[in-house]
Length: 359
Ligand code: ATP
Ligand code: MG
Image (cartoon, rainbow, N blue to C red; front, side):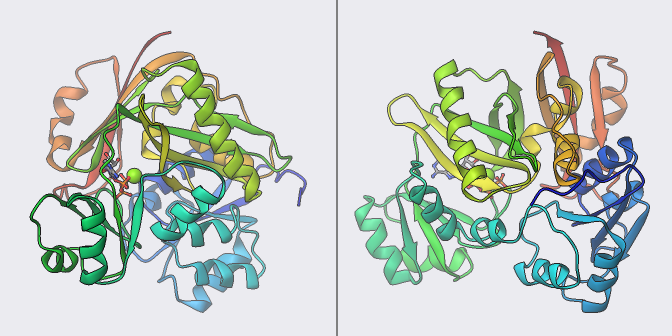
């Protein structure tokens, strides 16, 4: 349903309080909105940039009702917000964009794969694994190798076990937490790209140029734009992503991670119903960033331009990398973003840099 654009001064509610929430809050403030964030952490990154932080669990009904009353539109910055929480917000009168249907798909790797295949997107071959016995059978089918991924709650490569010849299914199933999982065939891709796209309330769709993503230890390390892919591949990524946005009448920014193999084509890996780490460069290199586009879309504003005016390389600062800040600030050509996190734990995303160059 198309509603009139929210006027500046309205309040945007963000469920989740991490760095994505922080950058969404900054974009909302830029456009003259107030921001309330919601989440259980006491001193989270997004609280430093928001007008208000409702610090409560995702099950706290009173706090959810208060949040729903205070905000003009609510959104989320991560996909593991319980679906029932979003249901409660809607019950308490909040408009939530994007809606809760997409969460049900994206929170479960099996549902996600089924959804992608139903829409005609190619994925890595996979097996539904509910027990060590299922895993044993799946591994036989896959000649002993593959990636076991928990169906739920995985991120940054967590909840994944890589299996090779001779690995024991019992041990692997246990190492993955003994929970329902999928076994995926190991894809020999040429590169990984992500298509970040957005859809406004009038149904208009816009796309950022897909970056080429490099991972280290299962965590995104760098995103490069332009990616080293042909125009045809880029157009296909757009087309496939648009089919998802339209199928679910999506409002806001959504990202599809793809593997590209010249032999097999584009395979969808996963969908993130939100702004994405591989799109942080859009702040420095595009007219409207992914954060601004998301706020525009959920506020019922027309989308801005996703055109890119520079090439860019985004590099994540993980854990102790952030200790290099004093050297990074000496280079005037490096745009540094820090997330205001106190403790540089191993594997924790602490900030990122973006280096741009002329097109
Ligand atoms: P993130 O939060 O970074 O998106 P995640 O934990 O949700 O990660 P995936 O995106 O599925 O998990 O996997 C992380 C990375 O592991 C991928 O970006 C890719 O580099 C590698 N990977 C995952 N699945 C496969 C596969 N089937 N074949 C080859 N590599 C894979
Ligand atoms: Mg991923």
